[in-house]
Amino acid sequence: MEALAKDFLELNELNKFYLEGGEKREVLRNVSLKIQEGQIVALLGRSGSGKSTLLNLLAGIDEPSSGSIRIAKTRLNELDEHQRTLFRRKNIGFVFQSFNLIPTLTVEENLLLPMELNGESAKIAKARVAELMQELGLEDRLESFPDRLSGGEQQRVAIARALIHDPNLVLADEPTGNLDRQTGEQALRLFRELIRKAGKTMIVATHSSDVLGIADRVISLEEGKLIENEAFN
Image (cartoon, rainbow, N blue to C red; front, side, top):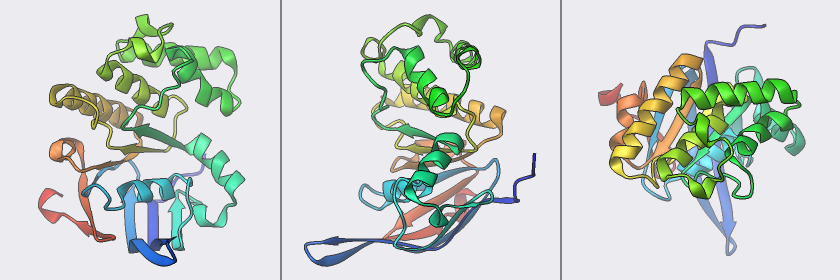
């Protein structure tokens, strides 16, 4: 397998704007950033500061207005929508504030879905699900539906879903926003342990300072621009 570049992720003069009522609204302005493989980066910013927009660009869900995004050796801005979808399925794991588990599927079915979309065999997929759920202490909840789980359990399943297909990059958008402080701290510690063990790169977008304890770097997003917080790094 070919080695990844030292700078695993690189943003170069990234801009994103929307037209609202005929007026241009800038969300991201000339954003440039390099992140090394295996780093956990906290992205701080108030609600509406553009954190989710940036994560959507990194995931290939949205396209930049200008500028470039490179993840490992892939330049996302050079891919069409279908190619970005395939890249995202294989290489990116996403954790949402609202968990986004499919309510009509069991826990096991929610976890199998990303692997099925990547063409993994049922035998390997089921073994991977069983292994990860045992690691998370949820092996007895495989047949449960999401609404039967506590908030903390749902978040653990959401973390498992983000990691189940062995992605290179994990993106988390306010991952503890729907949890109480104690449960949120437990989820973050678990997240850090799994990410470190797997050697993944992660960006956590949040308005809370709770995430600072797990991050290698802290970056703020203010008025569409990134500011490195040297005091935390």
